[in-house]
Length: 250
Ligand code: IPE
Ligand code: IPE
Ligand code: MG
Image (spheres, rainbow, N blue to C red):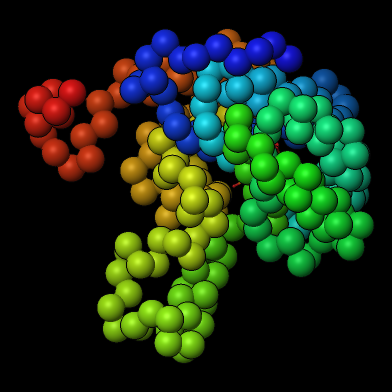
């Protein structure tokens, strides 16, 4: 990995990039290989993405690695993915730590095997003090789950008298969501050609720019990511205002 260099135009750079890493299966099928081969190959794109974010000074990266719906896949594919997660946790965490990456897993981790959970907890603890990049990995994650969880946590806080249930609004609910301590998502990127959210971050992408590209995840490299950043930089983010107001406040 190369050393990070400061971004040229921080204002046009997403502070938080979220990616649906889609297309591994099709990448492998096109090569007449098992789908798991595509998942393995996808790890190279993952490394390139982390390196890119470090170099460009993007502070938060959230990756959709396994959705709450992906359990529906054939047992063999789910098993191969779990093996891959285990291996990646064994092989990659120290290097990421060395680069100042803070790893956080979001999702309902209770569904995973004790050994996988233990490694995920260890990786989070090991890297908790790092500041160069927040790398959030969504596993057994669903945006609907996140919303229900936030509601449950808020209800519990109300029950304990910490907050007033009657005055819960979007501001007081916000701290109960996953990734509340990080900026909202600026750029939501999905590879693999599908134009849907697939129950990834919902609350956190309220005002994200959505970019969908046909490139299959294993083919993603720094050039492809730069293309997505260029598209982001071309967008006018108005946040409800008029174009003239945006221009005046720039
Ligand atoms: C995304 O690639 C990775 C996971 C869902 C784990 P896919 O496996 O969905 O690849 P396609 O969409 O079938 O090509
Ligand atoms: C979304 O991709 C989940 C991940 C990339 C981890 P899917 O391939 O599971 O989404 P659908 O099934 O096409 O909506
Ligand atoms: Mg897919």
